[in-house]
Length: 387
Image (cartoon, rainbow, N blue to C red; front, top):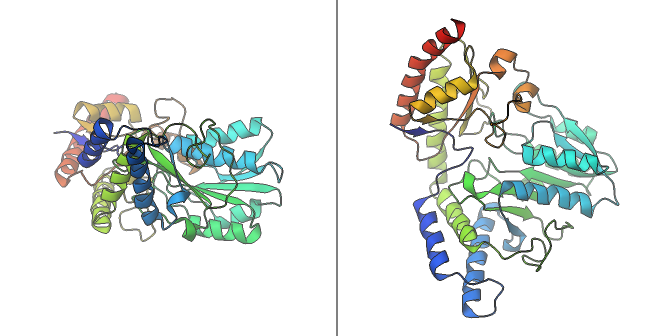
């Protein structure tokens, strides 16, 4: 049996998404900037995807800018804001547990003369909205916070952060990285007081190389890609119509029977946590299954103390079970996770943590197989290490 539990890294595209993309490449291959019918047909596909997405975000279609994915959306939001508002100030506030596509941009801006204030998290990986408010100054131009942490699944109080920050300084832009939350919990920019929201397509069964940035109408943002002025001069370059059409189809399917899907995914996560934490020296970094506090329905971070994460990962891989040792964008690097360090894990847990992440396609049978395999492997691996 094969069991893929690395859906926070990427998801398998829906069959309908693949079909749409193939059809667009075969038939609707025109350049959307062309004035003939082929171009108009391609442009219609882009507008259709904008409308599908805007219905879910409860925003205007023209507030959606298509990108190559979450990394570009985050870069565009942050660098574009920094450049547009640098005459007002060069101070940015961000959480200390952001994805590399945000944290690396902050390091770039620091080298360019900007000042960044990092907000710490508690042992659950959550930030305090009041800490954001206290950090905001007159010269603060941007506040950025992820919605769901990609490693441990903590849901950040972005609505409270956005409301409080805007109350203190209405001119501050508020950016939300919703790459792990869109398609899992409610994402409505207006409710979050968000000016900018980043989303990636391949996290919701869409194609890799697809994503979008919600940009509030009237917002001043500097482009980071220049050229032919596509997408209202905000993101030049001929649009990737097959990917955009595929992304629209993925969003459409994701939100059909949405509550039922999320309830099922959450049941898989809760069962995994409940069963694994019964095993000696196995710990959840994503809360327990009975907590009433909102957690990501699809992510479970588990520490198997006594076995290095890489050893456990490859032992599971040999059995056809695929998980992650952290964020897929940085899991091939040997340094310790900044997120797990920030929540105060000791060395034994830091070195033994795996992330399981679920999707609607996963089955209870796959989970049973994974649980049985872990129960069988763990004592053997621990004995080998200690021996």
